[in-house]
Amino acid sequence: MDTPVVFVCSEKDFPKLERNIPQYQAYISGAITVIGKASLRQPCQRAGLAFIDEDALYPSLTYKAVEHILRMRAGDVSRTGWYFQQFLKMAFAFTCTEPYYLLWDADTIPLHRYEATERPVFDTKTEHHQAYFDTIQRLFPELRKEHDYSYISEHMLINSKIMREIVEQIEALQSVEGTSFFEKILYSVEPEELGKSGFSEYETYGTYTAHYYPQLYGQRDWTSLREENDWCNADVLSPRLKGWLAQRFDAVSFDSWRAVNRHKQKFMLRLSYFYGHDDALRLYVLYVRDRMEFLRQVGAKRFLKIVLFPWLLKE
Image (cartoon, rainbow, N blue to C red; front, side):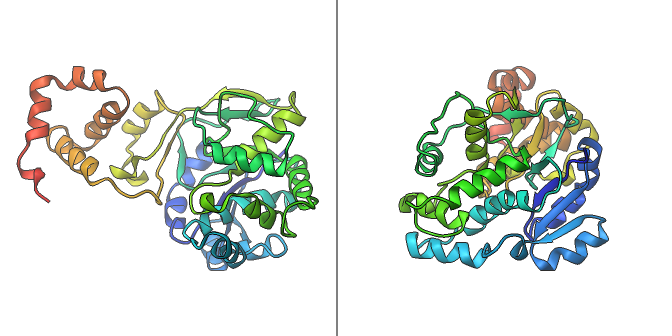
């Protein structure tokens, strides 16, 4: 079984994806397919990647179609791309000729080999966002959150048949406005949630599959380092630092949509002055995740010097 590895990628994020291809190929088996704007076709071909035009993947599913509904229902189109990418991941099930396909977020770099097991698994985390489940219940009234973990883990192994089943069941709903699955999903999200985060394809697929196919997937914990675009990007992760991160995390993510925190950046600059780049990043992770261990390694006197360091306190 040659499971395709699918990235939904914007023009802005493609250079980052392209730089990280060696990392993906080293840790994930399967040919890479990129879904994106038509302008990415040639860059993908040059990089040896399969390409699918996002506007040709599924009937009536386009960026403008999603934007139109968001404008009508919420007056806020800022999350158009976020919803559109999720719908593209679902729609790929109708193109995929393999039993499974692996979705992988383009802003996430694996730190360990992603091993295919005889039984597929859900890699799970601990977050919870109630609006996702409110939408799920409007689409599938019989579904509830059945576990204390989340299916949102920056990647997911999808059973093509089950995803097609989900899409077809949504499109068969007579009680929800719209014709295509993406229209019905957007009309199932409360207007006040549309401009925020009102739907999750991962949470929906995981909840549906766990309910109707409870024996199909196993489950394992997944630990990733997120929100770290405040202090670095993939280009500055040296082999030494990757090795250190791999002892603690399964993956590291760089969310390009998140606002950069200037206070965190300043703190990183101070750490870099005293420790150099790699050790500064390592210590920053400890500072965020394990404050006591950070203080043990740095010491109280050095910590005060870092905090009070005058040159880098200026704007």
